[in-house]
Length: 282
Length: 282
Image (cartoon, rainbow over all chains, first blue to last red; front, side, top):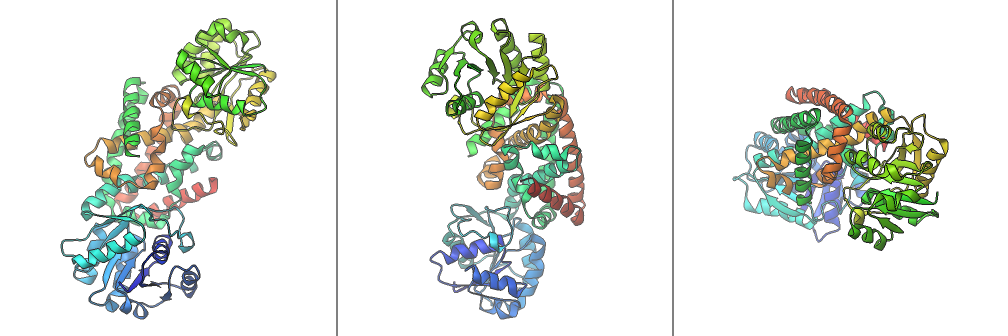
């Protein structure tokens, strides 16, 4: 593992770079960037050793290429790096949806033996490499979803990277990943965006935000997340997200009826069951 | 202001008591409790000076009575204390819904000149007096919703109490309070309970909670709130909450269509607008 190249040196990629710099990782850390300015900033922040603007100047020496870009930019980045990848180079990513990345990788690379899709279950609402935090992945889970075609040493190399960054690594199927994350991550983000936008566009919006408390702040924090990244998640994990939205909608209809009918017992049962589930998980 | 009696010495009432004990408040702090055990605990924790199990033993000396009980217990508590209230005693509360409290107070007391409804915009998910925190109200807002009938000195006395506890006090109408809080507090609580219960009762619930991240934890924190308290909020602020639910539902339908149709631009517009609103308010 002598050279990691990060494509997309934002908060996610930058945090990994920073974590590896602070770890026992002995390889070189490089980045493929879009501007001289961001490359220099990455070096100044101590995240990377060097950078390039053109894939041909950096991909040929990379033993691992990490794509940390929004989901809908994955394919074009794969196309850009493909001509310069060595046969042994491992390609991984940090995207929130895994099955579409596998489809993109197969379509562009033609094979999946060196492809190890990944998803760190950690994040911040802030974006950009200046928000990078080398402790972001400490004691967090990283889910890898390699296909059966993946070489063991490729999976091992990506696992090692995340472990050096402080994370624990788990392997699961890409379809299961996308279904489960639709429920716990994608749906809550859609809900938070929807709630804040509903309030912001209604009458009394000013008073509404003025009298909001800490609970509301926590509840809506994820609505400060990057719009492009989450747009791409919705577009690429569409069916699982729609399914999750529909399940919640069914449940909301039941709660709405219980409230409309002043069904005290039913409301209490649902709230108490939710509280118990929430407390059991934390 | 020589004697404050708290009815319902839980997290909310206990935090006020603790804050006043740590402040320049010179009066006596008492509590009307249901068991010897909880009364003794309140004294041991340093929250109250003394307590009583029967209203006749403590209400006659109270210059302010603070009702800190779930919304649907307000009326029976008002009935219990009414015979022992002095003419000058001020009655206030810490409930999340204000118009129903005013209706209850008018029905039981027959007049509102000494009634000053209040709502501290602060809370924790934990319940009970052991969760009391004397800093809970520091730099938080307390909303008072007195009617035009209220005596100035009564409003002043309740304001003073909250200011001593570290809060800032604002006055607004009870109907506006209930409408605004339905949007920023009641609806998010219903949503959080609904989301957690949806996930907890579906297949793969274990994996779902297992792979949940920090964003989900923040988003669902309020689902750890007291089920009875929030049941009562839903029952007493029913129409405003249903109205808020319907507004959100309309919005969710639009977002669902945009996702189903892969309408990239519409999704991004909504998410970006929400992000901007969220960032502007914090």
